[in-house]
Length: 155
Image 1: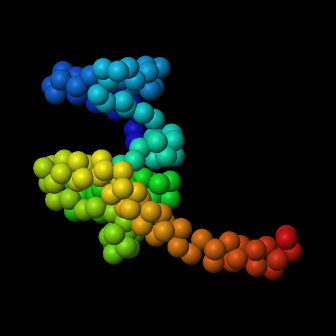
Image 2: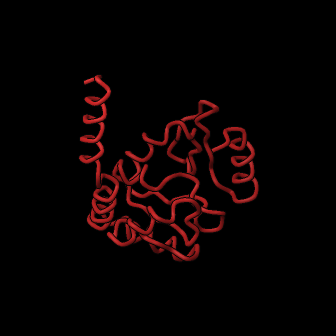
C-alpha cells in the first residue's frame, strides 16, 4: 500500500532472498528473468484482471487482509487467503460459503493452493463463485439508486 516501501522491499528480496525484482515505480519492465514485479496499489484493477490467482496479502501472517476481497472477486480473480481476515471477515465468510475463495493456514498450504489453482478449470470455478458473491445485490442497489434519484427529482 505504501509506495515508499517498494525500494526497501525490492532491495531486501534481492539481497536476502535472491529474487530477480523489477519495480514499476522505477519505470522498470518485467523482463523474462523477472521473478517479482512490484507495482503501485493504484493499478490494482489491472492486476486483478490479469492475474488468474490472487493471494490476499496480510491474511496469512499479518493482521488481516490489506484490501477488500470483493475487489479482486468482482474482477475475475481466484482468491486465496490466510486465517486472518482483518476487517473483511464477513466478506470472506460469504466467499467461503459459496466456495469462492480458498483458505490456507500456512506457507506450504499456500504453495499447494497455488499449484491446484494453476489448473484453469479449477481457477475458473473459484473465480466464478467469487464473482457471483461479489455481484449479489447489484441489481437491487441499482434499483435503489434509481428510486432515490426519482425521489430527489434528479432522474
